[in-house]
Picture (cartoon, rainbow, N blue to C red):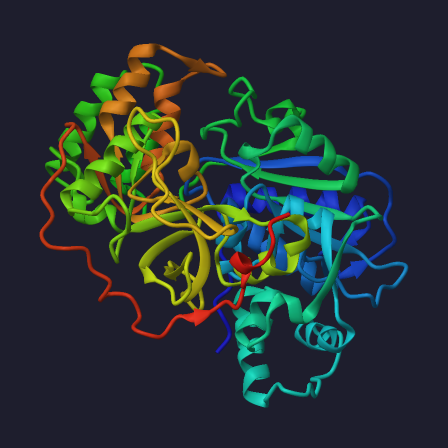
Length: 512
């Protein structure tokens, strides 16, 4: 059964037509599905709108239209060597792995800006699988891989558009199919950049050098990058190059969470008036909760959102204390956040193994227990296709008033983690949870400071980003208190399956 056609709002339809006209000038005719050689520099254009305005839907539909027209999608994890001279290409990028993974889960083959600059070189034998998955080759026969393994790879790729992830599902490691890395030498063609509010000026200039035609998607109400003086790069574009989306799509009209987020745009609304608004809505709608204390049970799956780093550290330690967590180890069920992969350059293949299993920076992880080898952890990667994994880990737990973090255990190199019971609002950009707890005393502290970013009070930007992380329910915590847990930490709700070992014997190798 075919999917129902997408019904655009008026502003989305106008934006789609304006982008189509831009692409037509660059030689891509979406209406007739015709491709012509590039016709010079199409320049940069931005699609901007607040939370729920339909930016991601528009991006996805433009991607489908370009793919249907025959434009080749260039991925950071694989690029076919079978290139025609007159090919037209599209790359869909995001500033972080976390933001790119959100798009991939929606079927949009996004990658990071950095990854598009450094692409892997595949072993010719396994490149045949990549060509088959991307539609440029026939189904291969590979020694050691069954038809069932290839079918798993194809099913994964159709959902996630990740070649390394598909090969990992088939039972391969990055060290099997990646022989090296190369820096991209030739410029690309059309670039879509999601979460463009996170771009800094230097990244924007680099992108304009790579892509003659560039389309930015961003939220002007979010927090700007550090050292950007509160301004987003798309704000420098001429007015006729900025397309504004207004209608709310993501949630039904009248949803109190988005009503609160959009109320922050009123210059007359101060912090006290806004809190009163939250309290009044909480009396009539269960989707907004006036919280007298932080719900500790929720912290194991949905972090408390804070502004100040010392608040984050205090809440994390309070969470561990109330659960009786020992100082020299972790309890099964403690939440972690991946803080990156700490590997020397020669281990790029092993980095790909970890990333293919969902261990990307910003990934939410639940600790299941120690692995079989020193420094290894059994982990559940939230939202991953195959979430159970055992990997070399470096766990860091920060302590109040102490400069150096406490490290309960660590491999010499591997996936690095911070505790995930609380995160800063800046770090939360690009993520969402069914229920989000916002620590209001921190927002109040920002309001008392009186800081302003690009004409908007900082507290309003913080509140906006924090509120829009909630998909279904918002808890506005007004007191510096922690509720008692209803029981010990649990992992029973996670899929009970043996953790697939990533055979990365990193702690046995000499450090570089």
